[in-house]
Image 1 (cartoon, rainbow, N blue to C red):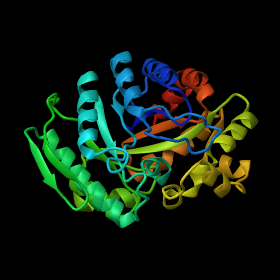
Image 2 (spheres, helix red, strand yellow):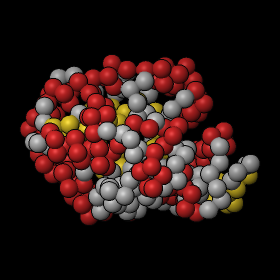
Image 3 (tube, rainbow, N blue to C red):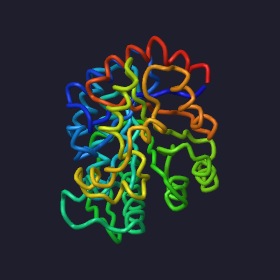
Length: 321
């Protein structure tokens, strides 16, 4: 069975609302949840960016069943990998084993804030490789010393270490990231229903491991209102990862998407309340081989109506997939 998840999108709601939303998602019957980790929204109209790890800690205490996951954290710039390991271990303990650590090479949008520029993609992959090696070593227990091309760790130890430690997921978008994920990850993460990514992951050691996708949707009883909201807050999504990872701020995303039309957004994001249309949008992920799909409801103020509708209409229809 394909598992259907709920996304706590930190770019579109404040911390208390995010926790309330995941509590309701648990009640609605979602199989798992994921949480974005941003310092900035993509567009100013989204309007939020609370600290994801504080939200995860609160969510761990407010829920009892639903799995939690960072989707995804960049462990190379804003955070040192030794700190990410400590954060993840703590959330795993607070959630009593319900946490998975999703990692990725990051976006300029969030990482430039600490200075030092934004490296090229090859360097980002090198840094992510070292970061995962450090996190794995700390999860294994004991004292870790590490001296790489990009990171140093001196006599680090996780004093509160969960058993088992969190599974590690790695986000992929091409051959190199798939190779890294196949080598190091317990699961793979992607935001496009591209079967070739999963096939490449499998070739590099990922066969049989979970594969988690993500899909934006925009529920509203008024389809025109849904299309307007999706265009206002989510038109950046069509830019593709090679573009989206490079742009530095909300102004750059506004400029890059100024010619995107509402009908363009509606062609890629299901809008309204037509259940078959939402099911059809999920189907390519299922056919590509994803075992888990996290839905992102566009608009912080629309989460509770979406969750009520999902519990009544959408989730039962998706179970049939």
